[in-house]
Image (tube, rainbow, N blue to C red; front, side, top):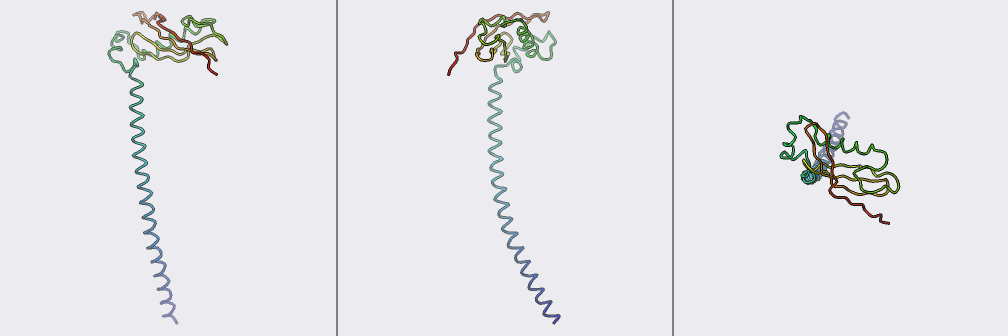
Length: 164
């Protein structure tokens, strides 16, 4: 009787081991397939990041921060963030009561104020302005003086038409 119990126990354990061996092979195959898919996805994501990096570099091409020749004009001023300083001074023109004095239009819904600023180089600024409903852009020439004063001169402007 004891020998039959051990025989049945041995057969039962053999079947369990066989089942585990077969199912582990299938799991390894399934995991390898998942790993292959994840590796392909990682390659796609790396390509996407690389394309995004190139796009950002292209967008930053016209920027004072990335233009060493333009920054050389202001080495003697000892400013840490020249573009930020210029942007702050330009935003101070928004503090005038009514429309911004650099914007040659009268606000239709509210007062026209400068919203976004892009310091292109050591002479030009591109800005966006709006009154909440109507908007436009300005091309501004600026001169940063040794006493850190700035003169702004409007070069060109446009106001977008309202489209329905």
